[in-house]
Image (cartoon, rainbow over the protein chains, first blue to last red):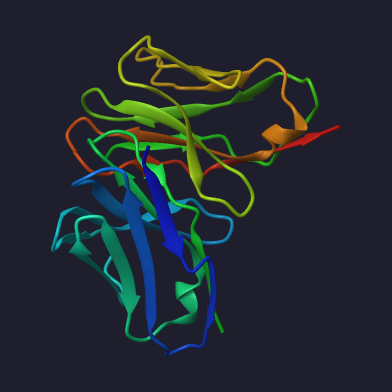
Length: 111
Length: 113
């Protein structure tokens, strides 16, 4: 069966510090991968998606970036965090353009 | 563009009450429709789905029917439990896009004993 991992589970970072969140998927190959952000009391905002190694599409221009160095690894990064980057970050995968399966999430607090 | 609208919460019900969470969509073509559930502090879990008109998705006592004529996909459960307390998201996969799911803003449900 397929599983998706995210780490860290929680993170507290000061404004201006760098960020690296990691997501890995097991039990499938060549998945579509997604990063979403969920701000407090709001819905989900799609940040990036990837259909293959090195292929990243950005949905929202901001100070975040994403990379896919391996087939089942998806990384979300920032060089300098802003207060507005606080939120719950969710990684998801899909094998076809239909349902997506989500990881447990990373709670990021920027102070 | 394609979008979903779901009723605003929070919804508070007593245990064993009937639940309906409304979801309507706007789309060109024939999207697939989904309900996801998010328990506190966790990621989203796929609850049920429907891929064409008149399909009924069901899981864990929850049901939703894809109604093309009313562009709706309302979530229902006959008897809710305290453990159903969560946030519920309606979503669609546009028929002309291979990648994005468009989510509603979520409806918070609280079930009291």
